[in-house]
Length: 400
Ligand SMILES: Nc1ncnc2c1ncn2[C@@H]1O[C@H](COP(=O)(O)OP(=O)(O)OP(=O)(O)O)[C@@H](O)[C@H]1O
Ligand SMILES: [Mg+2]
Image (tube, rainbow, N blue to C red):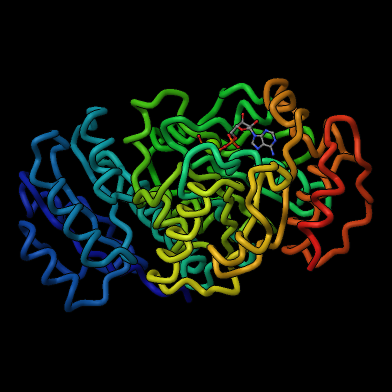
């Protein structure tokens, strides 16, 4: 027989006796007790084995229930919280979900419906919880660059396309929440974005994530950044973590494009990632910043062997030799991307260079980068074109 669900109820602003009377009374539901206020609830969560916390309240925005949800979620993030509210104004719902609620049901309602709503929330949470435990099978590649404009978005988009062309399932997530331009690079209209996902509330699973991703012709799936900078604040770190966990469990590869620098979102993504791609360019300022970035990763105890260093515009004649690069960075770049006039054109047209110029050196570099992750051997030999005259220089840089 299925084990019964052990529920704790926190009551706020309602009659505790009425609430208890309205609870399901079949054997699959076990009421552990009733708490009042933040402290009582937190203490009980710390000392009892609880499967679900029900927060029964009126659903007002100034309701103390929001504090209960917030503190309970911090104390026991593994326990799903279902809000039972006598009314559900939009503002309250949104704040309840932001505070950590997993689901919401109107109260009072029939005992049968209530039991169904509660078991659904518990089952959903269990599934996500398992994923938390195993961290998913897919690899999460976080594309980083400590400075703006080094080619992070270019690299993230072309890496995603190259992985898809190698028959892997790929999700690219645009974490440049304010000024994301993955949509532009891939020529996708921002019909659905992460902002819509954040606004939808409730707990996240693969089905729901699928509803909010866009599909590129290559098969790459895309979770776009909000369309406007003011929407960025709706994407909480919590949501981001959930997205990354669910995504890793469901794709072979998740590629995250990031804004410059180590923002909170970037740090969370680095923490959740299996691999990093650090993109620098061949100029002294960028190299200095790349070195600082690598040092920061070292301070974060990131496994050095999981960091791939990509040198973009690697054929630019700026008087910096390969030797200088290795001396400054203390390591060999793994991949070199040439400057290519086709690249900005490809960006303008929304067709990544791996597709618009599949035979170019630039495309070959991205396939080479993808092969570091797939373990496949890239087959297409690049040919020097008038757009990519840097071939010879590049071969010299690639000499290891
Ligand atoms: N190898 C290259 N050859 C030619 N143009 C390039 C190359 N790499 C990048 N660019 C151009 O430089 C610009 C910046 O590239 P990209 O948007 O990928 O950088 P980014 O690091 O994502 O920038 P941001 O920090 O602003 O997000 C783009 O217009 C891109 O087309
Ligand atoms: Mg970018």
